[in-house]
Length: 437
Image (cartoon, rainbow, N blue to C red; front, side):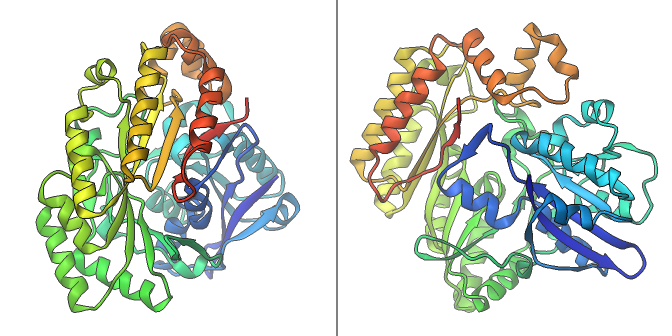
């Protein structure tokens, strides 16, 4: 097994190793999602950047095998970042870290955040599980402020109190929209999570809303410009839903004053970019927006009241065409009650968007009832033992979900999807997450 690895040192507190093990072969990524994940090494650079502000020195990210990892474990603090597809690899690295003399091992990341109690119960080599934002908890573990082992649930810092990413820690260059590209985060939290989290969303710690100050954004962009970056992805959840029109106007004015220009790609809910806000996003340099359409079935949309209607989406598409913006819609197959008819409605929607020449990309995924989501809670009604498990095979989760909650075949959908995605024009990128079934 291999892992992305950051090594940090401090005169007083010694060495910390932050690692993100490579995903297992259960499922794999294609398209831009691979670039986004790998070029930024998950959230570990955020944590390293925070520790740097407290006196740590970090070497750039490297790809390490088990032998190289073991060499660094003696008397070190080991932090591991877990996604669903890398959790078992994290457990493996936690075991060899403790066997190799690590001071302590702590686990964080999206998956760990929603299974913290179960992981502590089942995994003796993991001392702490960090729920949500990991910067403060990591510092407290290393400096001895937290001694009691178990799950750590701390109040997240507002994003304007956190440093920007230390770009020097990631040396591999990637490109997007024809330019040198990187990821930025200018907001934190999710507006939808304040009311009712999306049925399939497992992010349980997004209810604290915060945004960076315009002055902070400009300082970060000045640095990126000096480093030769010309394309950026705003990785924040629903960034347009969190910032105001006034904030965007101030950013536009500051960009003009400082003669800064970037091509921007971001993520948004359809209802967050109505009216003037979409035009303002265009003014600050936005070229492509990924929007969660989720399904083209009227009957299914009615069951998920937080989703824009087809009429609202059509109006938004017209605005994209008027403003010469490109759309990257996301669609999910596998909602409760999904039938071949509702699936075909979504396929037809994708084909109509293809004909309008508005697409920059397409995401078409099966619904995965991720632990921590409302969908997983529904699965547990028929499978109560899953509530206490620290891990269930992703393939098993998907197959059981489709069998119990839809009237379609998962295998047939995956075959049909392959054909739909392969027929996309060469200038339309594919963002889907594929499983090897």
